Image 1 (cartoon, rainbow, N blue to C red):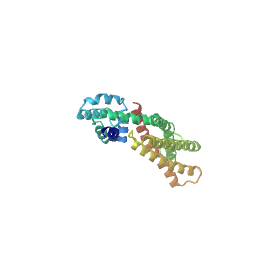
Image 2: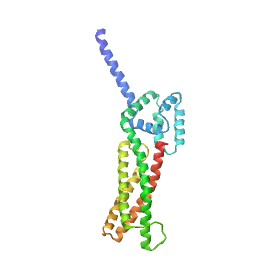
Image 3: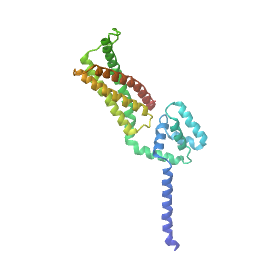
Image 4: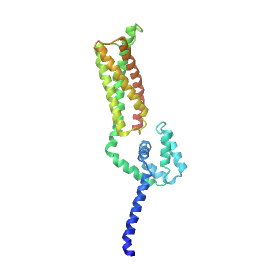
Length: 258
């Protein structure tokens, strides 16, 4: 009888072991593991964490996280710090390391793109702003001030056809940049803390779309005074927001490569 039950006992033991393993893995949420990988793996490898933390108490681990936050202010928010602190308070750091390894292996094919795209996007948008944005803003202001006979020595020049051509290129580049931003969001979410940057980028795209359409009406000779005001206000506001977004985008690029 005992011999007959032995295989059954072994099978039950294996099932219980598998269930325990699944339960242990379930304690680490995918979103928390990803947050830990991105935020704590920026400046150094995650191996350093798994090498040093086993000998530290929970309070000492929390102190290390706070120290890391202070070294790059703004990179880890209060809520993100709470998640990471809770995650690294586990007694099963080996299990956490295994969860990180599994997620890293699963995302390896796209991780290079999620790192390259934000950097290329930030550099390209900065180039567009400095090559076209400033010149277009000065050109539009020159036209506006000349019309109102204000500041006759305002810098820059206004040539209608050149202004229209550069405006089309400028708006197209800005909207393309918004499209790349959507791709970054689709691939990587907002794990790098770029949600405000993305929201402002959407506002820039919407304003440029409205201002650009108004400009095309003006170029076709179908504009009105209200259309000219709409064109100027939308494009100048969008350019101001674009400048702020270029600054924040370069900061995010520095955070990725610094």
